[in-house]
Amino acid sequence: MTRPLNIAALGIDHRHIYGMAANMVEAGAFFSKWWTDGTPETLDGFEKRFPDVPRAASKDEILNDPEVDLILISAIPRDRADLAIAAMEAGKDVMVDKPGCTTMAQLDAIKEVAARTGRIWSVDFSERFEVPAVTRAEELVAEGAIGRVVQTVGLGPHRLNRPSRPDWFFDRDAYGGVLVDIASHQIDQFLLFTGSSDAEVSMASVGNFANPDDPGLQDFGELALRSDSGHGYIRVDWYTPDGLPTWGDGRLTILGTEGYIELRKYVDVGGAEGTDHLVLVNGTRCEKISCADAGLPYFARLTQDVLNRTETAMPQAHAFKVMELALKAQAMAEGGAA
Image 1 (spheres, helix red, strand yellow):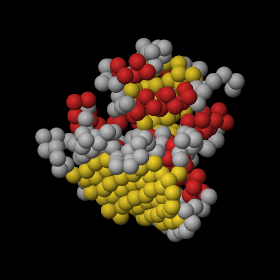
Image 2 (cartoon, rainbow, N blue to C red; image 1 turned 135 degrees about the vertical axis):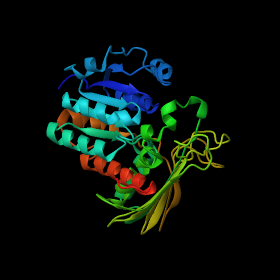
Image 3 (spheres, rainbow, N blue to C red; image 1 turned 60 degrees about the vertical axis):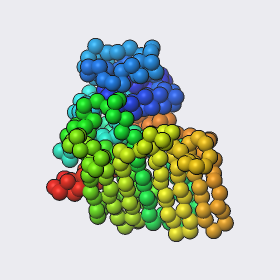
Image 4 (cartoon, rainbow, N blue to C red; image 1 turned 45 degrees about the horizontal axis):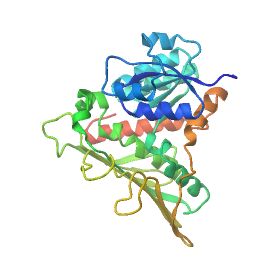
């Protein structure tokens, strides 16, 4: 293929579509068209960012376009699986916003269609793929800077921003539960840094402690993971106070047998300005490391995967496993079976 990768979007209900599309364009893709159902809260922001990209008259216009190679999906979470399946059945590869699905039945259907069609189903875990500090941390771990990783602690606090939230945000079945919706990010990072292909959910809980008038909202969640390679603890919430200058103080601590790495992804409270703060401590070093040139390789790699039918951006099995574990954790927390 000599022309640029042709991308289109189905569903723009979550603001993550801004980064998904912009980063693919930055990687050289041509954003040809988009479609969404109705007028989501994100519409104005989307049109301001991509004023020259036309809106398709229907989703079938995109699905039936032979020029479209990759479809980006950031619809309401409960609708993402059906859109992804339709895209793969139409011969398109897919990049979906997290969570890629909201039920185990959806995940099973996605697996079946991906296997049968040979199409790529990739989840843009933005707290890894859109954070240069994580890129740098992955390089340091691969170099052996902290020895063998034995544990990750991932914290994913978020600001509620109630006035800007659509009705589906407060509907448990629409967003899939707080562990599926948010903690899938941290599960992804646990598997990556511990080198795990599978894990057991050893503890999971969810709650609504600050928003009693919204019974469908889970504003707190936690879980623990263990595998043959390591252990992990994850906490997510919707409690970020207004005093913080960004939406959440997302952190990741990677503990190795010979040192540790701490990431303060979006803000360093009381410290340096800016984002992507990484601290490395080992037997010879105790320093803050620049991540300015680390880059976001996922998007260029996914482009090449679509063109060359490879798995350099993220192994397909990894994407499936992250969502499987998130769904199992959610079911455990709610007292049921996945």
